[in-house]
Length: 115
Length: 112
Image (cartoon, helix red, strand yellow):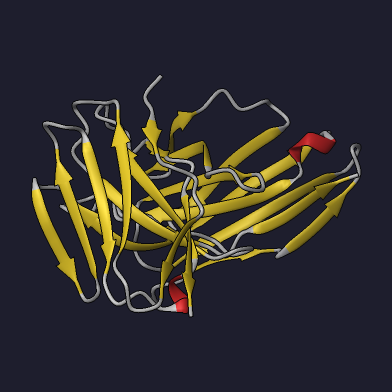
C-alpha cells in the first residue's frame, strides 16, 4: 500500500464550527506533515510530526490543532476558523529514515471552505 | 528567510520537444532536492529527487544539480500534452527536522 488517504474530500464549515481532518498511511512512514495550499501558490508547511511527536509548528494560529494518535494516523482539528483559512489542506508522509527519508508522498487533500 | 526561486511561467513547448525547468535556492547547506508535478486541482506527486551533484535520469526525466551554483533543474524529453502541469521544486532545510520549502512552481504547457 503506497497511498496516503485523506477524509473528507470537501468540507464546508461556519466560523463557529468545530471539525477535524483525517489523514492515514500504511507505508510505515514515521514522519507526517500538514500543508496548506491556496490557489496558484505552493504548499505551505504547517506542522511536522516525527515518530508521533510534533517537531515543527510553523507559527500556525491556535485555531488549528494537530494530533498524531499513532504512527499511521494524523488529525487536524479546526475551530473558529476564518474565511481566509479556506484552502486545500494536504497531508504527506515520509519514511524519516535512510536516504529516502525526505521523500514525501501526498494525500489527495481536503478542500476546505469557511463561510 | 530561506528561499526557493522558480519562474512561474507559463513555459510553452511543442509536443516532442525538451522542456527545461529551473530552480535556484538560497540555503547553501541544503542537501536534498525534489521535483513534484501538480495537476490543476490535484495534490503534488513526487517525480524526481536528487542528492548529489550531476545528473540523475529516470525515463524521460533528468534532474540536474549544481550545489556550487545553488541550482537544480528538471529536463523533460519528448514532452507530451499529459506533461502539462505545474512543476514544484522543493528543498530540504539544512537545519534538519524535515522542513521543506517549495518554490512557487513553473506551469508547463505542452502544445500538441
